[in-house]
Length: 301
Image (cartoon, rainbow, N blue to C red; front, side, top):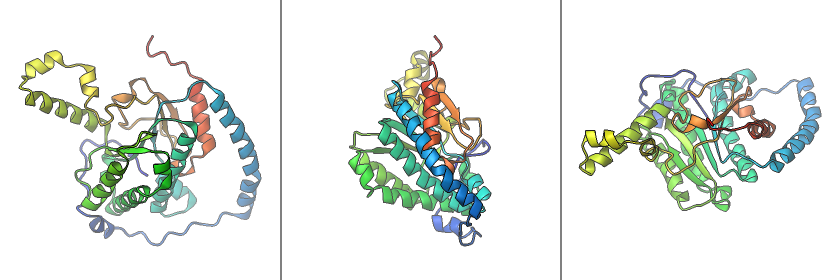
């Protein structure tokens, strides 16, 4: 999926419909190139070695006393992955969506209770119309499939949308909200999908919610200012009720947050991985977890 390369001061508007944006796309049919024989042979040789290494690493991760309780993932590098492989750009986004399913399964296997995946930022709305159209179609289609995915229901995964969906096309918004409603009674792993999300926008919306609530109670601005606490802001964030992320992973080699969970990430540990998101392997995930387990979290003490 997609995360901004550069910050923006104001969120661009999405097209009124998916079809309107799709009409602007000039991308042709997608065909994945066949890798050279020597490269395929090298891959076949290395697979058993990675399998052995990955198994040993997973045993170490499982035997350690500490796993993250909330992992935030910035899914970056879809376009770069596609460009490096000679694929059409949109195929990179599609492969990125499939990778998100894999990571969800890894977290279920390890018993990690909360995940937040940042799939589409407020800045991403400003990309060219064809790319945005593909992303919107992808989100709508994946949401429709997830409603019927037996893995979601068997594991009682609760899926929540965090972000501003107001200017999404109606069909896309409806599919996303239908998925959220279909899982709202589940008590298993909580999967937050950050879509139409920006960290600054989230904090601003939290303040607006708080102001509206206090105004409804008849409180004055002076009274609110005198009583305002950090917990008041936290209680009105999109993620209210969930633990703050203790571990944040970003792929593609970029070393920045780009606005991801700005309030919640005050004490998060960070891990920046050079691999682009569609190429993120389980062994990369396990290496990140080992790095987290080796850190001494002191919370300023």
